[in-house]
Length: 339
Image (cartoon, rainbow, N blue to C red; front, side, top):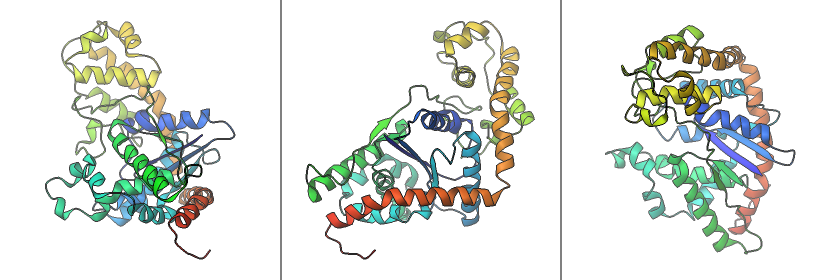
């Protein structure tokens, strides 16, 4: 089994990233046996598909390494690296561009969302972004890829590209690429904004009060929870009572995710109580869970030498795993190159 997943190093990690993805990465890492691999990468090449500040990207990449390590990703047990140090990602993307079809890419909803009404002004990198995503996982013969609902379409494209490439350029008994399967962890919590329970918690939200950053100190966490949007009704005793109460549902979901219990368990304990009682309890659970992560992150992000070393070691391991697949892809296409 080989799991591959990536995250863009743009902006700081927040509670939604941690509960929705990173904590599951850590659990996957901890559950892997000796014959399996976890590769987690910082998608800095994807980041340049949109306008960006080079210094911010560089700093964000190193801080993301610090955040992931603080959350529990162990560079000695998982392979943690950034794309830009593994040129095979770009090479394989170009090779796969000959197999990917314009019609397939035109159907990608993420391009339409990010390009908006100005599609002619969007970068070619944004349009071919899904092909690079396909290269990211096919390069390592990934067997499984953790995906959210918004990324399932891109993994399906990766499978389509792999299937066509194998059919066109390889024999049935010796395919070049493995077709990766999606993993959607059922326990992954969907964390919403603290200011609007109908919108996902996001680092792009202009209000810092809408999210809990993994760099927030204990006092800031408590303040944000206290000021989180709610309604005047007390908490119900069952889930049905949270219908049409998105902010209340969000806070209950967060509590359950951090305390490792169900929303029903939370309501069994706090049903009938107002938010004046529930918010301090939520803040306490949040500080207890995130406090050690925040402290470790603050310590790690100042040690740039160690962060560079983590990325360098990870990239070396990634290049070694990637090389055989890239060689097979070149050979299958009839391309002659030196070594």
